[in-house]
Image 1 (tube, rainbow, N blue to C red):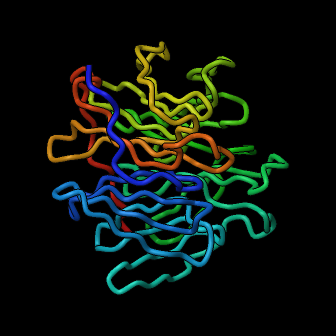
Image 2 (cartoon, rainbow, N blue to C red):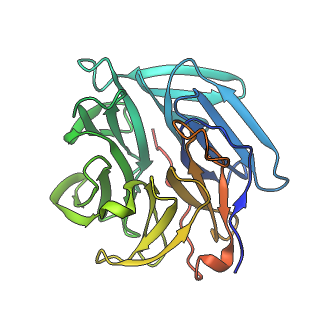
Length: 287
């Protein structure tokens, strides 16, 4: 059985939000606390990093080019070549210590994004939707540490997490609105906390285990199918990537883990450990 591949140097304080870009042939991922966006180019393994003036929680490709990103100050338009940021708006102006934390675009081209209190001292986070006209609204909350989200293959179900509670929720998506919130899975104590997620073509939900050094696949009915150990404790998220969407990259965090020698690395799970599962190209923002 193959071993997990370490693709980058360790040390990202809070590696998160991996995004496969077929357009650029790269996986983008952020270091939230390090104020950085990183790119790993699949063709040759080359890497690139961009510095940001504040916490950056995620990037999502824009159909017209460039990206939308989630900053501590809210939603922003992002161009990398040349580098520029243009503020869209702050969905939580009354919570000055909150920041963005994880997001995905749906098949309608909207962005669904969570927030959290940066010191994690109160339950002030929420779940938001950014429309293609740049309007936004809160759609669920409160959350302590909003994480996830991911969609079923037909985009009729969205999964979202409150990591602090160990709960992963399901919602039905009906005419662009959320309905029928219910528990999908509750993490047991020795599983760590549920963090970032992705979905495979069979509807399996893959969840990163913060504090337990692994990722797990759950069947659509919430049963734990199998787990894969990752050689770092704080595993944060994962994505399918590559031309055939049969590669999986995994992010991790070094913050608070001085003795974890690979913490904060970007990892790849060898194909033979994936049991034939493949993913989807991520949806793009259509605004």
